[in-house]
Length: 445
Image (cartoon, rainbow, N blue to C red):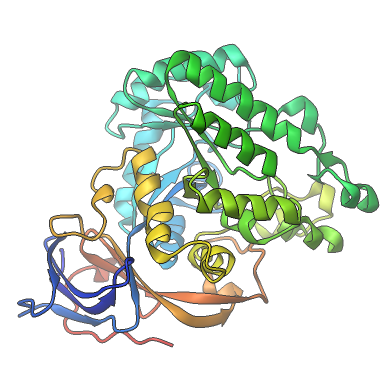
């Protein structure tokens, strides 16, 4: 059941203050002196109201790796982080390379109810990079897949990449490339440079990322298709994307929160919480990524939420799994890295964490933002709060976060998905309680 909600005194991304009235899953009023009779009242004084966050790059692990995450637990983590829609990556078991699997993932998302789950289809069968998956069938399925990716693996074969781009062009889809030249990253463990030599770890050269991006933007230009670059991590990659955009190529790019904040220096302790693909890079790379996000070269922030069981991370560095969880910390890390520094404002955050990822994924409704007639997907955020990030701040199944013990700014106070409160006072609402709850004052602190 959808709630009638009256959000009072919220600060909108542009800086103005307004009340927001929500009825039957839609924003029906925006301003002051709204008729709120019978509505659940939410005191949002001092809170920033953002359009519900959208993650274009989430690993929910189900089916096949439920020991790490499920669609339900990942959806809960997403809601706790202020997200109202996530795109679930295809590297499951079985791989999401058929209409049946993507429809299963979508159905699990609907059953969970916390966020909209949009499946991402694999580009190649079994992520093996040998032949195209059932791209057309997934696009025509009930899941209506529009994003395709072998993320975790690069579509290294140029001819297959061309064919995939030609195929998705026919229905306005996009291929999201994991840019990693496999021969240049064989057994790679961290960013290639002086520190990798000092630590005795196999280096991961920046050119392995940049060469694939350069190749793929040229192929996309040749066939006139859309290509999206996952988790850009180097200064050179930003330069290539900037060049491609100036040339008029239909390329978009994402950066993760952790690549905006963390650097390779953290690897000195061989703590596998900091082992990620692509690896943490240098200070110069981090500065270039922030600048690229600020000037629009990089279109969006995406979490690359990658849960793993404890034993996969509590291992010696070379044996540990790549990946970090990131849904619950994303907004705080974006604030810490680019908002508090003045490089992005809250209107920019709304763009890179909601409107732009929704546009790339062709997620209807989100482009309207916070406006009368728009779907009621909202995040209420207390930017003045601080917290020492800890395991209790995670709502998913895995705890491989790189932020434990770090002081992070901000706190998601409430999340509203399709007119229903999924987070109240920073706490998840039980699924069976999504019905009307009556008047409730939101606590901040």
